[in-house]
Image 1 (cartoon, rainbow, N blue to C red):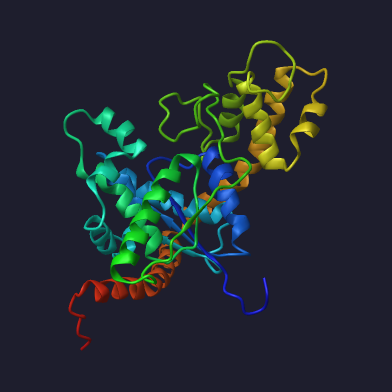
Image 2 (image 1 turned 180 degrees about the horizontal axis):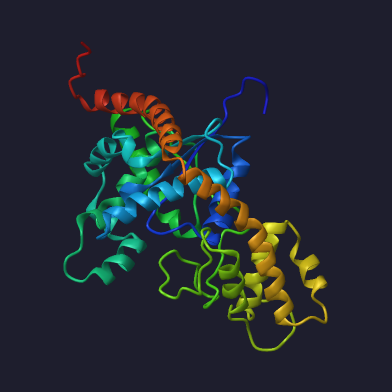
Length: 338
């Protein structure tokens, strides 16, 4: 980047519906840390997205703190990136209403995640479950983000965000919003369940052995990975017909930086047990310092609150001009400053 050139901005966040997982770390957080030096980064704990289904308020508050601490422990630097809690910046909800008035029912109804989640809700489907892609779009457009790190399962929501941004730009001014581009990390984007290697590792998996959490003890990690479902045969190769072995190799590659051919070569003549034990040791080495740093941060909530308040102030300073520009172009009377 040439001296004085503007860094492209990136916004991303995770929902504190459960504890952070190894999949979250490899697929998102580890990549976010790398982005900090080259991009203008905003990272949020998306607590408003966590209430689209019934929840326990006490658990939500604790998980929000836990996720914020996990961001820092995982390598997000509040001094160089903007770290904040979504509900601390009211502009997110304000802009979401504007977007709701410029989006179409058919667009939202076609969202795959809405179809999947609403099928589990039965007759009483919360409106928020239908409209939350608009809050997600607001999160992005509010900060005029150039890029949004997303997994394959979120690409549809980014396309909706782009469609709405272009629609509003055409109606009210072509520079109202930056039209964002998806940024999809090429490596380690999908870590699979330890019990079903054809399904993504999930925070909400009912099987406690399927997911490694960043709060797990060393012993818990060792037991979970030793119990990981592998495949028929005994040869350790990278193959789609051996999803369990491929998942463990993917975890190792993402955490060590070693190539797949290098890893496969190291297991010639070895059994699945060797792969499991060595994968577990690598995961323990990664998770242990994160877990210990999280514990340290949570022991001083006052300092964590201070860091989050500072981040929220910075986020609001960036968000307000966008919202005021949108309000002006819609024809709202400007708020008088006394």
